Image 1 (cartoon, protein in one colour):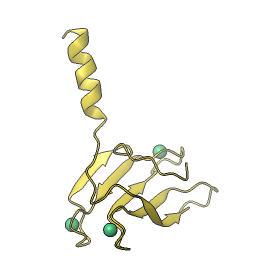
Image 2 (cartoon, rainbow, N blue to C red):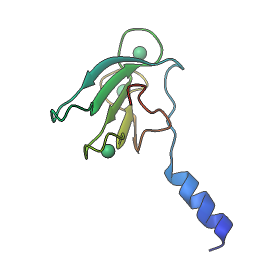
Image 3 (cartoon, protein in one colour):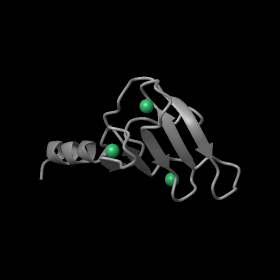
Amino acid sequence: MTARDEYRAAMAEKETVETRGDERVDLIVADTNHDGKPDMWAADTDGDGKPDLFQFDTDGDGKVDVTMVDIDQDGKPEKVVDGDGGLPPPSL
Ligand SMILES: [Ca+2]
Ligand SMILES: [Ca+2]
Ligand SMILES: [Ca+2]
């Protein structure tokens, strides 16, 4: 494996997600483990008032570990990726 291949492999792990829109309004920001830092976000990206982007900090370090996108807003996320999906919460 060349250095270039390793670089590409590292880039592939940082998956970015596609959302319905380009804006972001956090409808719900929750601190589920009560440590004073938010660890759950439900955001609306297309301005229709319904959440379509969900993020979770599962280990409490303040960084998003799981990102889910419900692109058709039927309540079931179509896309689940590790990390923030290229969309870090503005509250962090
Ligand atoms: Ca929406
Ligand atoms: Ca985390
Ligand atoms: Ca869905």
